[in-house]
Length: 463
Image 1 (cartoon, one colour):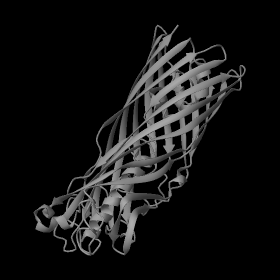
Image 2 (cartoon, one colour):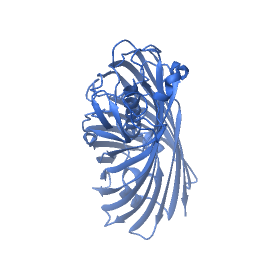
Image 3 (cartoon, one colour):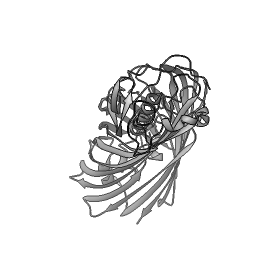
Image 4 (spheres, one colour):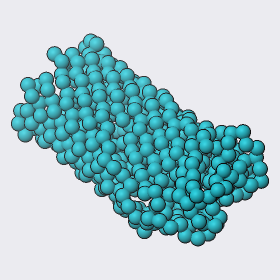
């Protein structure tokens, strides 16, 4: 009985931290939040070569040399309203029998992500930049009685990145840049654990929190081929995280009424025994997991089709295959179904992906510009067997519209509205192997998802 509790706790922690790489399903596939600039969002993120304001630092920092004026600051907020629902869910206990509870529901809520960028022209050749943006940010939360509670019940992730950058204008055609990335991430997770071979609702609830700083770099190049065509290339490095935190366990459901509940959660000084206490589960214990967020390479361009019309394109390749395995390591070794273990291993087996975006901007009048774009964003998930219930990721299409209004040239307002269509998907998780801290039974579900994103941005240009 106790075996099941320990196993699920561990998985819970593992998934929570690992989801640093997977929780952004509401807006973009894989690890990414999806948009860090409202001007870019209005073209479905096709306008990386435009370099219209200080937010170019995120997409291609070499674009900082193309900004007008001595300095400027850009502030943006993206409000994401995801509609992610599961249905036809099923789950079994490790020892057999069907888990009872809710088989459908909504698991996401509206979230907001702010971003701030600044640029300062040191001289005619060198421009300095600073950005604070949200690369990851999401939350999924199942009902307490969901049949998938022994997989993952709740997962939340917030990441904040700080990036100072310097851009150098080599000549009238070529600009280069480098940025240093400092990324702070916090994750939280809740998971239920099956403690009862009799399937009489003896269960535990585990809550896990962890955090870490990770560091990387960002390179950019922009090439003004001629007066009409600009080409850009940007490379964002991998960022390694060693997320450390605490897992806390408590009884839940009917198990609270069981007199022998002390047998499930031991005190730090309890000696290991054959039954109950000593199975390795503590009211509070350490947990850690090492993950690496992927590097990406982007090729983008801008074509001035006329005095009023600009066309944009972007192709981005991401090495999501780095996320093919992760080990969650616990401070305490636990008795599991087959022996002892201090870790839970998951193998999502992700693939490398690409994103293709096309967009345009039409100068309707001197102050007003109309913008639009479309994009295809490939999912790194290969199959239903590789999909996790906390991230039912699938291929998606972006449809974006927006507008830019310049008031007296020094005040620029951007707004954007995007609809993200996410393909329906399935989740099929096999029964645990029994050699690590995981004793869940087989489970499955179907998902329908979409997202609406509203973006608001203001740029002030100093003289």
